[in-house]
Length: 113
Image (cartoon, rainbow, N blue to C red; front, side, top):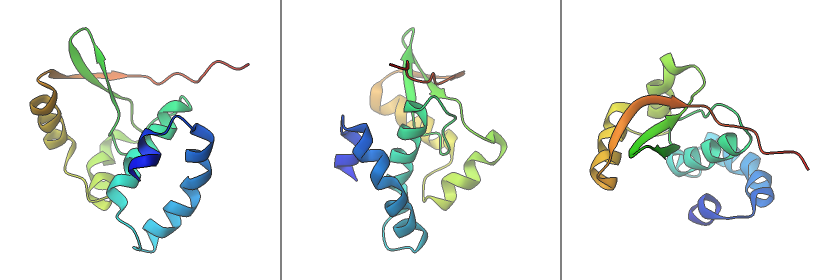
């Protein structure tokens, strides 16, 4: 999971996602690290993220990329064994020594070649 999270090989990451999601659904692997990979892939494709794990720095603050169905974000996070988004934001603020904004950033699709 760590390799997939940080790989520059986006095609490989996208190729591995369906198999990893099947394993997580069957409870054969931990879903929490997979949630970061899913969100990273969605943001890279210019889509809304699912678990709220991806943020970016803007003007000295950290802002979350937009999520699908924000009203049920904490439910999805709980299913993936992640803390509520409010707790995650506090952890990020402590870890990076930056204020976490309530602003939401829209992901943009990559330019077509």
